[in-house]
Amino acid sequence: MADKATIVLFSHVSNTRSITGAEKLLLFFARELSSYFNCILVAPQDGKLTRKARSSGLSVQVIPIPLVYGMYTPYAGLEADIRKLQESREYRELTDWLAALRPALIISSTCVHALPAMAAKSLGIPVVWKISETITDNDYTGISVELIHRNSDEILAISQTQRLVFRWISVRAR
Image 1 (spheres, rainbow, N blue to C red):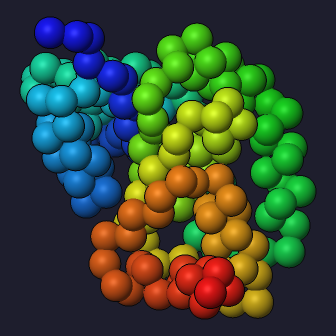
Image 2 (image 1 turned 180 degrees about the vertical axis):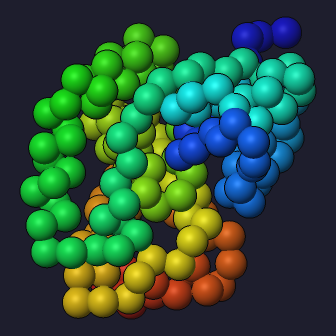
């Protein structure tokens, strides 16, 4: 049998004493996909999620990646702040790691986990961006939505409520 393709699943948190709904869903995805793919779960630290992943037989990589909370609560300077983060050591190390690994695709969990999606997209690695929260609707929401749209190949919203913010993309594309 040929080697399985690799998928990297990025979790935004890994708390030591609790596990979020987004983490539970990401772990479920990883477990289901692991029958067909070599799955690597990436988390910013060891915690309950990484323990559960390892006990399920999943590969785990701990990589601290800055979160972009402005993706959830957009503001005028969001794009400039992201460009600064893309100049950081953490972003360069993440990009180098992905370039060496060359996964078949990555899954970035939650809107605030922008850097994995941007790093993968810059390398031509397909990106599935899983949106588990409702992005704040304000004058700058379009910035977050456009950044997610531009840096993903598929947007997976876990409900109609989370998907509503992306409605203008499908209208604009028609």
